[in-house]
Length: 138
Image 1 (spheres, rainbow, N blue to C red):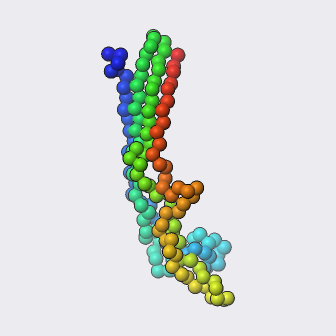
Image 2 (cartoon, rainbow, N blue to C red):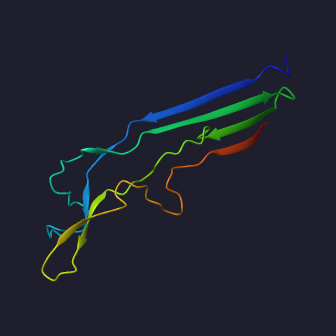
Image 3 (tube, helix red, strand yellow):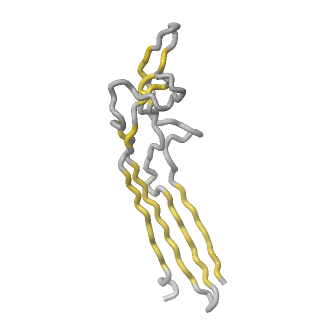
């Protein structure tokens, strides 16, 4: 009984649809001092969606009671178990501002529009991670 008793298996499955976002212009074309709120011309508000997010986290544990007053727990955890690529951030600038001609503002298409944004070399959310622990209670 001691060998097969005290096992526990649990998990978390997270699934979200993509979030709505605006297609923006990479600059301040309306001169309001905020270059982050200028939407692309003729594109409605929140008309585009980011990629979906799916992740499975698992935890396995085993309790052992060596004596009446002590307990040992072995824990193994896995985060993003199936190592699914979840895009954390995408480039929402549909156009870039070209000011090569003085007095004129021209919009040019952004070739990086809707591509993953890399920060610290990682454009995906968290990669698969494993963690082991040993807990001793007395």
